[in-house]
Image (tube, rainbow, N blue to C red; front, side):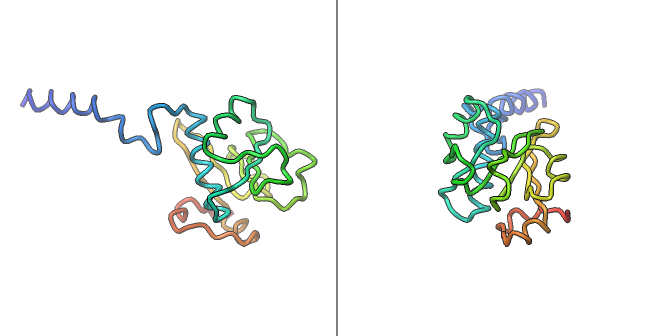
Length: 152
């Protein structure tokens, strides 16, 4: 019995890190976030090539995002605008009828123009979309997103 427990402990130590959601050993938190946001953006637009405008992200964060998604420096060119937590939309981006995501649940709930949010809570990634806002913008997500859609 002691040998079995020892073997299980060793196996967990060796293989336990291989089962993290979308995680690769060389990815840090911002890279993992950018990989997930890239997938969400592609599914929202229905294309593999999506242009995303990042609001108020520093150069290091933008470089991490560029590994997984096409970043544009002007919101007019973007398919999706990703609004950073507690930041406001640039005045040049207002009224453009773009898909807007944020990394703040509170901001998502309070702002009717934001379709969805990707944010971290308790060290776990969370995704949420508004059913009504998706419908208003004629956006249909794959069925795999149904568990992330709320009646807001």
